[in-house]
Amino acid sequence: MVLRWVLKAADNAKSTRLNLARKGLTSFPEEITNLKNIRILYLEGNRLTHIPAELARLKNLEQLYLDDNRLTRIPEELGRLSGLKILGLGGNQLKSLPAELGRLTQLEQLYLDHNLLAGLPEELGNLTNLQELWLDSNHLESVTIELGWLSGLQKLYLHNNRLTDIPAPLSRLENLQELWLDNNRLTHIPAELGKLKNLQRLYLHNNLLTDIPPELGLLSNLQILTLSENELAGIPPELGKLRNLQKLDLDNNQLKRIPAELGKLEKLGQLYLHKNGLTHIPPELGRLSKLQILTLDDNQLMWIPADLSQLKELRRLHLDNNRLTRIPMKLGGLTKLELLSFYGNDDLTFPPPEVLRLGTEAILSHLQESLRRSPEGMMEIIGISSKKRNPDSRVLMIRRAQRL
Image (cartoon, rainbow, N blue to C red; front, side):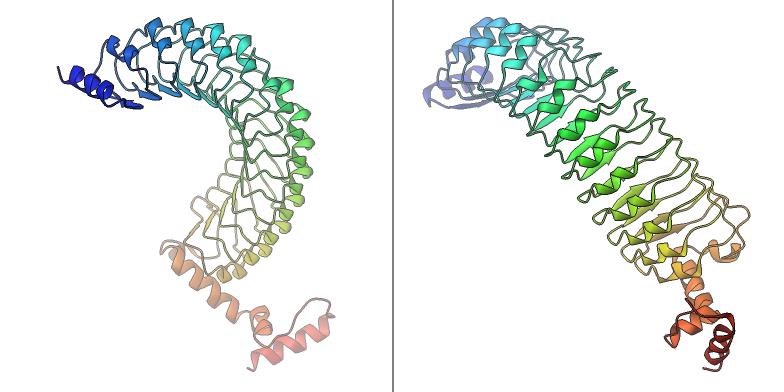
């Protein structure tokens, strides 16, 4: 009764918007098909199992939200809604799509995520005005549509599928800004991906990748790159050319070393390197002046370069479960550190265990005091550098510092 009143009121008022989201509907209200003025229709979050072909009567419809229902099929007549700009079909039980959806040439956003799709009609390649395409969390093993035709596409979501390769035409998407390919079965990244000059976010984590093409270093606008949980044994030095990169995730791989060129990533704020097999950290990482998070835990590191003391913006430094024996005193200069963690370094003698147990603030204070009392620290107090000095002059300088 209440629903009929709402529908009648909407008709009388010539409403252009009808919200029936999350109303517990189990069947489609047929009266909706008579509301000729409706432009936006919300039906998501119900228990609908069927959409009538008569819905195509709503010629003015521009946005249709049918997400999170129990739909198993979509009527081909929806292809007649020529003015549709947004179509939400995510979170249903769709196994296939009608080819007629390729007629929706005004469509800008298409949500097909969280369904049971194993394939796609080639006709979707006709949606040349499409800006966002959500295909994540399906059963896709390949992408059969001609992606290269979707020239206006800005965001493409293909994560949580069963993809084993990346379609080569994808490299023609010149306007693409976000590409989500994580949680698939990819073993190879085509070099052509380096042609996506406007790409800002690239998610490749949790695949089966063993190497990365150096051409990814050409993605000059890239801000986020995730490569964690793969089988990478090396990283191309060309990634050091990604001057706009803000986040680089390389954890859970098989890396033994990382290239010094990563020290050129001047905008990098987050660098994740935990759970690899790293035995060495290049001193050049000390040049990452905007770095706030650095994770190096669960590696095979025996020492840390004192150059990391130049990371003045660092907030979190994780060094747990390595083979460290000493920590550079100069790390005490990292005054913005909120977390400095060394657990699981059984042979660590400096700082001593009783200091480590007191937490980050105590560790920093101990490092600072130790540096101040050291000959090198005293030399810094009086403004003398020990670099490029002969041994005799260095001894004299230390003695002079000790008298201060």
